[in-house]
Image (cartoon, rainbow, N blue to C red; front, side, top):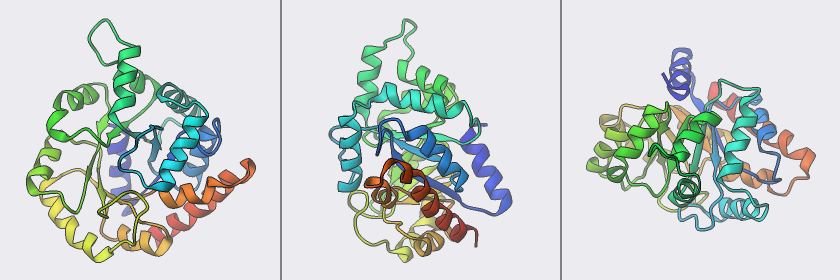
Length: 273
């Protein structure tokens, strides 16, 4: 059983919902990420989504784009992100970590670190670092059955995005290859855009569950405790990225972790109330 599956299973037994914060690796300071990850766990995070910086992030809004640009400016690439996960794993062997990003860095990594046995270098090194899941925004489900099988063989989950526009056929395709959880993008548009329509999310989730058997996390547009509570009432997990990035973006170094912890504790207590 993957770390992600066992986390969701334990939460379900407790009648609780997963809190999944997203931060960009290497942001807002190049070497702060492992310590920030530990802080988020102590504040109640159940799974951590770690953004892999990329120069052309098609699904990201301005807040997460700025975070990625800053991390790229520090020279942060996929090898550094894997090193951050390894460092985090020295003290935390239970909290699942999901890498979220785009195909290009993975494919470049495989070209540079090719293996002799035909195995993907990325899958091998991600598993060795302690990564639990991968969400590749621009890998459509119909094109990654082999990638999904390779990840599963290494004990990693492949996580997919679903959107308000997802058809029943698309959800059936996702069900064939997805494991861990699916991430329902509750808005049409990029991350951080617009206000969340909780009624629309409530209406969509039963439809998703008719097609997809893994837990459903909801993100894009959750900015405060009240919205998190409303979404937590119907979803299995709440994903928060843009608001967290905004809060830590301009903090001096020693304030980043306390600010993130305070915000996530508010969300956690709202989810648990």
